[in-house]
Length: 197
Image (cartoon, rainbow, N blue to C red):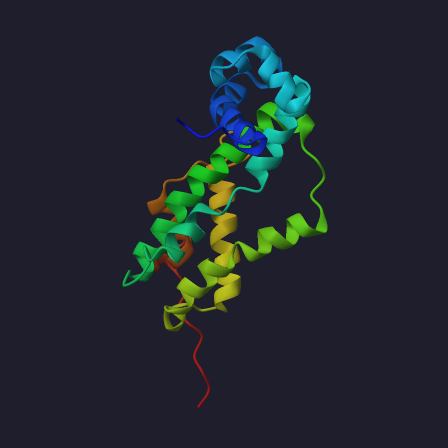
């Protein structure tokens, strides 16, 4: 006999199941559509969340707290032995997927989002810690402190993955190129100033 799910487990299962339809339909999604996506009766949704808006708010809150995918990859050893280029590409690829989904959530369900708390902002900063640690192995190739390099890499990813009109969609390879080399080609870069002896 399969053990019975706790109410928290049931809520998580429902949230997992309704994510795609909520991102596709936004606030126009109906309770019936959510129930169908979750494979449950509408009454089960109401029992678990109270109403459609509460379910969607719970979904938005959960997705906003989702662990950083690039950090997970780094902590799992995926970045060990990688070159700086491979590390930056791995981070960019995983972060793009995650931030694109978060931008989609903002676009479709943004009115349900809460103002970030001090704890939310602190957690956003903490998510960079694995990036900083991994980049630190390559600090001799970085022209700035690793914490600043990690923050700049994340800002490149965020700006590059938003396809809603105010970003410039970029591939991970393009992000890596800009992160490591800037936008000027070496042929057109000004000569380094002479250093007085």
